[in-house]
Length: 186
Image 1: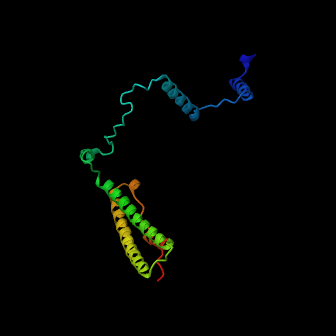
Image 2: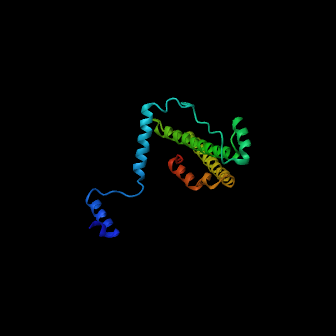
Image 3: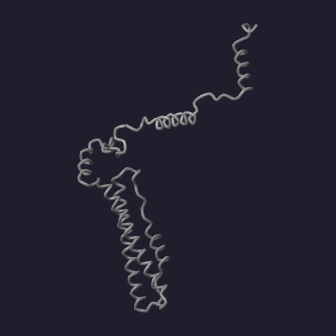
């Protein structure tokens, strides 16, 4: 009798039996595969299969740059002599100068706080000296930020978009510093 049933009828009965029991997932289960691979790696580690690999405990050799192509020799010469490509050096210089400028302002901010916290109020000559130093620091800071923006534009012309740096918002940074470190009233 079962032979006389059509292919469709036999398959629909199988699907009904499968749906009554625990649902079976069809297709690729990425999480289950990842867990399986991680279990295999963990088992191999426990058995010590990774203990005697060549280069164990040594840093990876990442000297070869597949993207350098025709510049590979130049990059190798720069690296072996303690230098980096011009764009990398410029990016380091920009970050360094920005940190130095912010550190100068932090020292000035600390100086103002020390003067304001003293038991003896600051003398008028100290206030004038601080206000003059503050005005000069603000001019220098603004000039430094504008110069950094020029360097950032130069860097952006040299490097791919992934390495672009954001421009510094000079006005907002100067305004924020003025608010955090106002001059002493005379």
